[in-house]
Length: 478
Image (tube, rainbow, N blue to C red; front, side):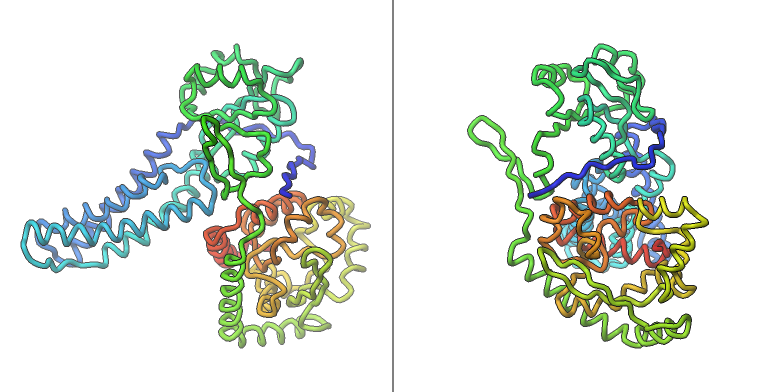
């Protein structure tokens, strides 16, 4: 059974929402303008390097603008609300369609206008394909840094349900939604605000005309809103898009579909358990990837093992029992990154740094862990300490991508999440590791691992692998 573990602000800190002054059309316009400018630059470069006839640079530009058209057709401008796996799939399909249509356009024009085969440089199309694929995550990152990615949304509903929705939108900022107002017509008493987000009655919407003018989306939490109010909201036409969160939201994943049952709507909830075919495909990928990596990285593994033993007394590898689902366990292997008397060092450190003990209780990690060796800090920052787990993948204990391999003493803290996490093999890398691993609490890691299992797809695995490579290169680990 799927679980939805609501995130808690365990620190108790009150965070005020950042002001939002950007509309969805504005975000889309910025992204389109960026891709058009990129197309013009590539076409201009092709004209200079290849000394093309006068009519061909224009044709090159038209070819490259086809990529922009396909990205628009696949909903990537701006693509708010798309999960990461969905966005990666849409971007890949848009680039593939752009490649095919660009080549086809040359052939059509050559046959109709010239009557013969047209010799045309192909490299600008390949450069544009790569550039258009990379421009999507780059544009979102830049817009996020500038505070121009997330569009404002109004949340309709009261109590804990509305607060939980605010937490979810903050938890997944890549969706492009930011709560700016909570409209509560069901609670008897309401606070003036929640962490800086105003809480109002429906009749007070006119007081927020400035925000309403740039807001297209409303989120309605069904369980806390009366049906008559939902119908009233639909008929007012204030919002172009209304997202209705049903009572069974914790059973819905990206694999769910909307179905018609006569004149009524139904939601087909996708099964959480991967099909046998998908499981075999994932296992085949794990065998090929881990086997190839062990062969290629063999010399590096040997060198790191020697350096670990030279850096501090003790064995090169650290072995620890990890949970493998149900009542099964396996021995995970990693390069040792801690002193062999690490627990004694940690207890002594807590005596003089009580705030570090609270940090460890919340995150199960420390920024300045006294147990970690000098080389261990480098191995953790680059995630090279995880490489020996390729042996676990080859043996079938783990997968390349999957939930975190929880220790046996952490098993009791998973609660009902054990049911869903036990459906798949744990992974060397996973969703939470590439989604702010150093800032995530233990409860948030569980939530993200559950999200991965419920929404598993090859596209999600590819995105996680891509983000893992970026994290290793940028040394985002600890």
